[in-house]
Length: 611
Image (cartoon, rainbow, N blue to C red; front, top):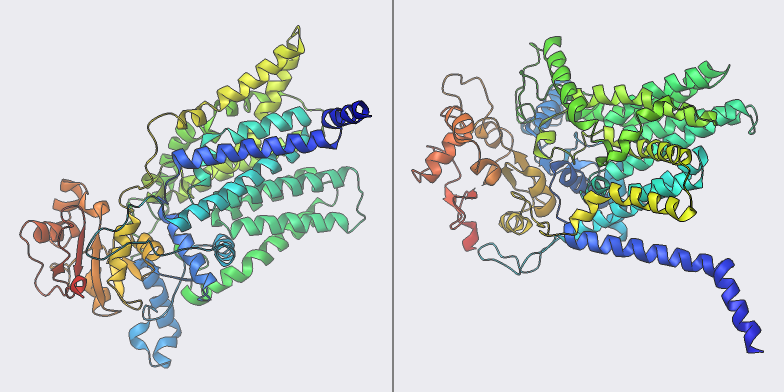
């Protein structure tokens, strides 16, 4: 009686449900092991200002403070103040001294709402611990390894990454077949650049999932135009869903909204006789999703996209580097088309020479271009490929015009890298060409075919494999040191204002209101009417009780940024403070935290660390 039972068990493990469960469990274990090893070897705390800025806005939303920010950009001060002056709201309310809304909650004008909302929900569910144990304002605390909220946000984005892999699998299976789907998913899992995005804290993983949702919606819409199954209104609903998905992407990253252009072109080309009606429905749904948030921005700042809408001006010869966001009185009357053209052409050259060949971080993308000459059996495979080709020039132009100093700070991992959105689908089409070429060879045994496929995946994953070799990635990236930032924050009260060169980090790690360094430290001696200095905020908007400078400024270029900046520059201020050990006359912050120079400088109005 025992033998039939044993045979039945073996049969269930070979072909029954137990075998499937065992295979799923083994897959989950291997992926979990990969996740553990990667985080152990390569995790580091947030290293981009966009990630910290979005996270601190998400925390404000979770705490019931709405879409407000502790990271204050001088440009945001200018926009809010100008708008309130035009409306006369503050003057009528008897608050003429707070036109910039610094004494209360300052509205966030830099981030679209979806990703902060997602993070706010995450913070409501998981136990975030904001304080670093053992931190003391005057002495070092316990050894610091990682900031727990950073790690939780990274884990959440890694689960979104696994969701992206699943989405790519189902899309590839629908467009091609199951072998292409499995290999595409494995190549994406082994792509090192996506792993780096997953631990960066950026909204990229969320946006990639939205883009894959757009691809799926377009496939359904295209299939419905060829073989109707949902009735006369079904195709209109699908067109509306396409517009909603693009709108959600635009509310995750404003630049994503430009994809409405290739979407409308795709509908006009491939959606049959009702294509004009479908295009209008998709456009109306897109506007309906984006409209309320654009109206909110206009109500608080007089601009549709806040400070983010001025990215096209940043990096031009009119506003080089980050001067525009740090400006309290930007001059827009001299803006002409020439700077935009120069910026676009210069950045397009860099994109074509560098970003396009490295799309997806693996050589598998090189299979995409020759795959353009292949005729596919399924119409949907060919038409989605055409949609990707429509997206490519749009994203290249938008990325070229929207590139700012953020791309210089973190060249590959940043929110301005828009071409990464196409990378998963480009990998799918690259893998499909690989299988097409593989079918042309007369392989003598099936085992050799499997060896070639495994070799293909392993070679594509070499950059990720190298991560597990020495040296190990450091968890801290200068100038972002959470323990030091929390030491500074604990010296200040919640309603006090700090000025720093890393306000996004002070807002995220320190939970204190912090304004970005103004263009000048002291008033310009040659032009007293130009208020672009420390006193323009501290004397006329809200008193600044602390100045915190990190290696981002202390380690700047000596000649171009310190000497040539003039006597009113922050470089001259640092030289006078560090070398001559004296602050400029009438400067209100005259007490320096001992032991931090020359790498960092903290000036306060009194010796708060003795408290």
